[in-house]
Length: 369
Image 1 (cartoon, rainbow, N blue to C red):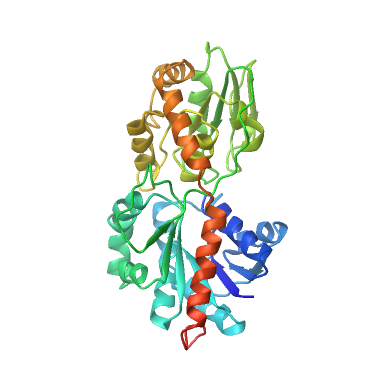
Image 2: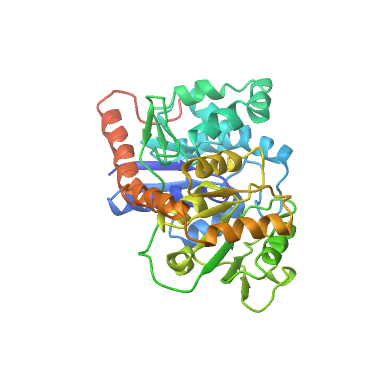
């Protein structure tokens, strides 16, 4: 039995893949602990995962605290690194698995000589250009972090993306596909599913309102998921439109005709796994949303429009995607590629292999020096 420590943060699509891998490792007989923000403690416990209390990390709640400057501070938080070292010193740890955005934790692990893996849950193309090559990377370097050195020093970079959409040149990656659950397609009436981010992006309520208005006159029922940061009562509705704070993907995607997403990796892959064409409305230029949107358009599996698009523009895009056309075959092709992967199985195996390899090397356990 091995001991794993997952280091995560209170985001949206970053947590489910880590939790799925953790559950698989526990099922195989290993011990897993999570180090995350205090706002995650209850959710992790409810999911049956052991959460380590933090003492030094910045407090952060994704439902309320989003600003670009806040995110730079959270991702470069040296307090998270101190908590990581404390957790490793407190209990045996064979491998630390760090979220790709937590550069404070990665820096601490590298400097301490720990054996660690990096969990990458977004396109590598977006990570290299938008994160490491953008304002985030510059800020980290100015604060005397060495993000690329920390990535290079990892024993493994576990990439949870689809090669068809995110071809990866780096040999140090182990690309196992997206972590996504799917159910077989079902017959049903034409349905537009609208689900933007669970993250608190500014202006999201306005975007949802225009999307609902854009569905007027479409021959389809409309299901709108607002997420935890937007009150469903604030979204205008009409007959044929149902608005809730959350629609489980397993409940609505098997019969969906179109999925409207902000371009988050998790929701995009969930839609494709069900062969659903996508309308991508990127909400944040500094995230991976635009890279995801371009990949979907390039593959012919959907369209992308600006978050500032008019109701008429949104209506035209939705009408075109509800119709028959090559976009449906393209989405089904990508869906078959997603379903052919087993990221949870292969990712857990890759992490186990690291532990076995490390056990054969003296001094490779992740203990605090």
